[in-house]
Length: 183
Image (tube, rainbow, N blue to C red; front, top):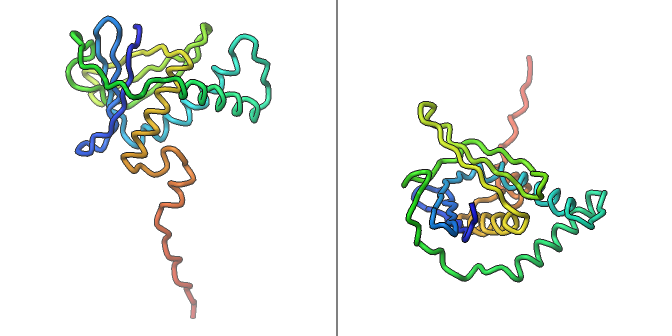
């Protein structure tokens, strides 16, 4: 599957992110990402991007801070040259997963020896008719997808997706129970 475009938008009525991708052979795939799934998925995607960047030929980074710095530099370089202004093209003639978006209930990430990230999105909400889709993304597409998900989650005002500490701060503080006195 040669991915042509990615798009991520918040659907306010569903309160979900709609991840869409189209291919050069005019196929379109679309997936629903809930807030909970997005909060679980983003750290794993970012960690996978770090591992992919560190595994590039000619890179000898062994410690975690250096890996993170390298990933940030590579991500920033990619984002500077990426085209996020071209509207998503609705030119698909085939929808291999059907007309309705796949509700992502399970995700499996695997770094491939060829330097790609394999993402397997699964919908196990209907056990009689489970659906899945595997994507093979080069590190540049991993950065692009993560960027689009972050942007959409900010627009959705989903606290904690981009900064887990923010979610903890946003939780209401419960008043302590009054002391108990025994007679």
